[in-house]
Image (cartoon, rainbow, N blue to C red; front, side, top):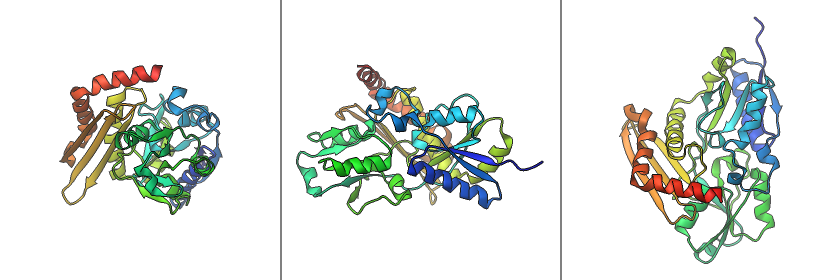
Length: 308
């Protein structure tokens, strides 16, 4: 049988293309033929509405899912934090690549001492906004949308004091400036810093090829984080952070999870350390603990606020 060419679907932003080319190189190193197919997504086109107003989890992944279901591409490469926890029917997670930097960073213009006063910070993420307000209740947070390049440009064009970015995205395309600080107190988005490859469930050839790129440690940690997210939110956008880390010396998983009110005033957190053998239910159990300790009421409140 002639080997088929694996068509890699991607958004056409610089970061998405970087991710697609990274996967392409890894597949070619294994001897597979590949081709990159760029597709524009609604998330890139509609820049004037906050993401949660668009009412779609997966706005960045939907266009590629459709291209895959229609047989135009064989795989799609995504920043895993953008991917809904429930994949469309017929599409499966084929590999999670080794994770990069998990942190959020503040890229700032001018003097960082401004943070002590009444600063204006930009972010399009409810999670970052809520955690920022929790720490700096007197700051103004403004909405910031678009791909990484667009957002960096908007930061330069406005008189904001800074904007929050995922470190991994800026590092991947060499856009990380000198003026930044690591926000090590901010719990990242579930699966932040990880890239995922999805394929069609019935495409054995492609799944077999792509599964060779899977990093098991990243797969386990992102599974825990996404399970925590899915158990808490049930399809609604909310300020949720989660980070699981494998400790090789102790053979344990350390997990931190957080759920905040939109204004950042309420914060429910969990910190757990379990034996590696208990990883499969760790995200679920942690989310249940939060739901039982006020999280269920808080999620109702968030859903009501987002409907307005």
